Image (cartoon, rainbow, N blue to C red):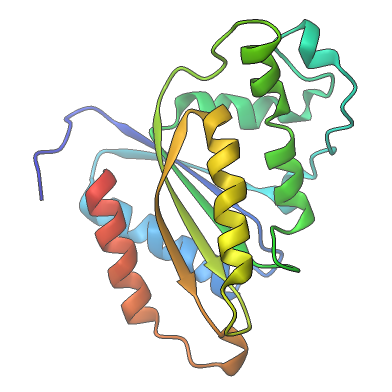
Length: 193
């Protein structure tokens, strides 16, 4: 492991699962545990998109005129994104994509695109390294591929890059190798913390 920065790192964990004890949140808990083991000097912010209950983007045009959203429910998300060095998105795969509450958060990134293209402003200065954690019940990884492509686009607005994607496959079978997944998480975090 390389030399670590002596300053505090900011990790933002955004969860998109309604199941508190499900596979996705188990993976999220592993991230928090491994991050604490790898990097002792870390601040963690967790945002549960189901608890946030963000309004969806309505393409009202407000953010074309001001570097903000007409709805103030996004302010805690914006503040956490501004501080983050590392971003982790933890989500189950629902109908080949993100669950609605997490998709609403991603859609609200429109304000950052508008800041750049309509207002000429860089909305998020701090660059982030990012990890996608996903879980899906089937053997088909197509949904994860679609989610990765969506994140690559949104991450342009978040000033982030997708550094790793870790997936619990075929969870409906009940046979999940959490030890192997923990190893993948540790490897990914060691590379970015």
